[in-house]
Length: 350
Image (cartoon, rainbow, N blue to C red; front, side, top):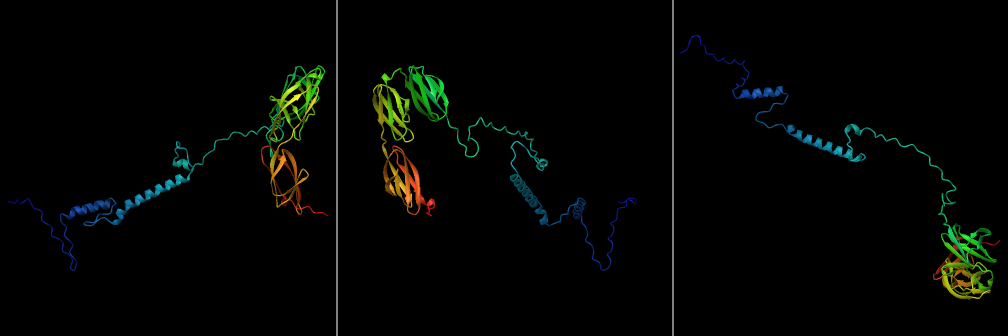
């Protein structure tokens, strides 16, 4: 039963479309949620989805582009870190510090070096062509009996036994005097060597004698490791009796033992013959060879026997002139002497 006051809403009839116009589609209840969602997406600034279709391809490419940009940024950062100078592992470098130039710590003031005192360094030990300083030797002098006055090169140095350190290398004339007896010896001091001289001192020469060596090279005379003298001295004073002498020349590798007996008040002459060694002589292109003024043949000479010591060798060529050399022949070794005559132009006669 319908009351008169309760009026039901009547549906509004659709408007009539103009003649010739296409009627608009009727909306249904299913279309209202879609239209509401589309309006919400438009307000949010997003592109509305199309019903019944997939998203556009460009929307799927956005994550790929972001990944590519991230990889590029990582590679550029690695390249920059690799090309920059290495920093200490415990120092962190921030982006703000990367462009700030490094500030070097203040250096200490430069103090000029004090020039070396010329008197402290030996001559020839600095600059170009410098060489090591020559070591000095030591000289020990004693007499039997002791208490002899010692003079070296005419200068009084003390009483035996006497030990002198820091003696420059060279030859010295040693003179010992005691009770009217006098002994004179010539000694040679080598760099870094210790030279010992023992001289018997007696009031008369009845219990002593002398040695005199005849040798083409210089020889040092030792007895039981003690230097008695050298062949450069005309005579060497020794006690009368038997002696085991050692004759030494280090330059030519010569050593020889001699057993001698010295008579009191006499001079014992000891001739020393040098052994021979092999010498090989050659010249370029070739030459006639003279040794100590004696013609020995034409090069090459493979086996020439010469006494140990120094020898003068002369090479002569008819067109290239002559050349002189000194050969040092050592005991127990083969000496080779070679000359190149082409290095010097031939002498011309006017």
